[in-house]
Length: 209
Image (cartoon, rainbow, N blue to C red):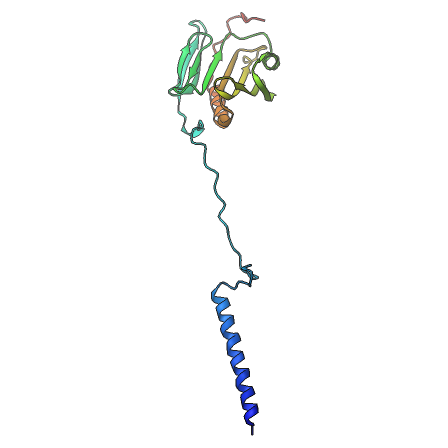
């Protein structure tokens, strides 16, 4: 038979057990957090990484459409596809097509040369007189470079010299210009012009040396 003292002790222990159970339930409801708000084992907090905003004023390759343009001379016409809406400011053997904003352009030089594309790359790299000139690459007859224009700021140029089929020297130069942040689209414009380029049959070598 329990004495009054023993009965009081049992009631105290029972009360402590209930208190611990209630405290554990509160912790579970609040996300099983420890006292310093550190997630308990097995609980993972995720944080959303802010996305980098897209360049809203960059030239987008996916939005470009192309039209066929013919230039050169009557006896030796040359054609290639250029972005639609880019208008020519100069005809003949050295046409230049510029977008309506004046930011991007593509130009051709159909006069040709007896120098190889590699020699043309070297000559152009040495002759560019622009502020903060930096050559990015110079391979496969293509020169890619950046510089700072006093009026327009950072600029990028991509110049490619193409040899005639089965011949030596250079048949044509294609240069695309814009800003460094437009690089992907500028490369796309250059590649499209290269792939759609149509040169006239050779009618004797009249190219300058």
